[in-house]
Amino acid sequence: METYRPTTAELVIDANDNPINPPKLLKPAGFAMDFLSTPPSMLTTIEAAELFMGDKPISAIRIRVAGVAELSDDSQLVVEKVAREIEEQTGLLTDITLGSSPQPTLVHVPAINEEEALGWFQQPWVSIGSSITLFREAKIGFSGLIVSTMAVAVIYVWASSLVSLLARRKEFAVLLAVGWRPNQLSKLLFMESAILGIFVALISWMMLGFVYVTEGATVLPSRFVLTGLFGFVVYVLGAVIPGLLVRQISPYEAMQTGEISKASGRMVRTRGLLSMAFNHFTGKWKRSLLSIIAIALPTSLLALFLYVTVRLQGIMYTTWLGQYVALEVGPVHYTAMAVALMIAILTTAEIMWQNIAERQGEIALLKAVGWKDRNVRLLILIEGMFSGLFAAIIGLALAFGMMWGLYGQFPTDELVFILATGFIPIVIGILGTILPAERAVRVSPVRGVGGNYSNRKVIEKRLKWMIIVIFLLVLGAFVYTLL
Image (cartoon, rainbow, N blue to C red):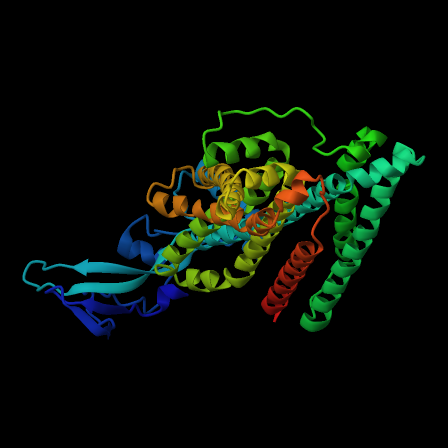
């Protein structure tokens, strides 16, 4: 019915290019040749219209497609199919107005003939396909963040299981020495993971119940059950690799120290802190890969989400529908991103913590020959920087690939902005090595040379409290977004 609504416009810039504040609202003056035309004032029949306009009085036909009741990808496909059939059968041009939105547009009215220039007017024009674009980008951004957060959580569970195996290797060697069988150790790891999985499932169901009670949201029974089972399965699967590796432990390893793999190569010649840190980083590349993936996934989604947000903000200032959609994209998305990044920090911290535990003899020797605490601390922080650097490269590569797949073009205009997000994973990698670096600084040369590799209870207690605090912060952020 907007065809019969009187057109309006706001004069925002006069003929001398001076802004008008507040803008002047203009309406039709009733003159047929005026800039603002008068809407139709009567209805007629096609036969009567032929008397005035000839044998082709129809200029446009509006069609409502049956079965399309909401804005979705399926509805868009149905409408596009009908539009193609109309063009093939009639040869007429079709425009799909589903998913369109009014767009404030500046129109310049210059001097014509004897009429003076009026200036710049702002009018609501229709932007074809703007809302379906917003719908798809917002959906991709939210779904991608959820998938990324879940993937990082899975990696953290698997990394924790692996670190637990490495830290308890002597314990398992002692059990083997007193008569335990390797399959019993595997069952022990699976039972421990199953117990943790049960607690995770219970917590998940409690959180869903909280949402159901406070928000009145409808939760399908199947989805409710599957949510808890997913956490349980993740923890059980996390025990698969440790369950296989524990079978390779020999009883005599109770008297040895070191890593599972006795071979350790060096990619570059050690000439300083950078090369030494790089060799340590590549020497444990399998563990480092877990940390890299945990940081790279949220980094790629962060770059993509910020790019989509920039596009939404761009449409927000030109499309009225975009104002609503852009306001909807916000706290929930960034909360999920923060959760993923905090989990990545914990993953890096646990892996580096175990690396330091296995390198206490080396660190003690370095301190015995004159290394300062700041040098030891810097060595560990540089290793974390390498994790973040490789994660930044992989994450940005994934982000550019997703942008190319979504938009079919390289984001040259926002290139500097997107590349700037590469500093975030580097910071994440360094943050994840702060506590392990402090632990390395506190290694005593006497304890290291003496072969004492027991963990310091005070530092372990600090790490546990840090994990508890981060968990409470994540839980508080989750509850805040719900309220």
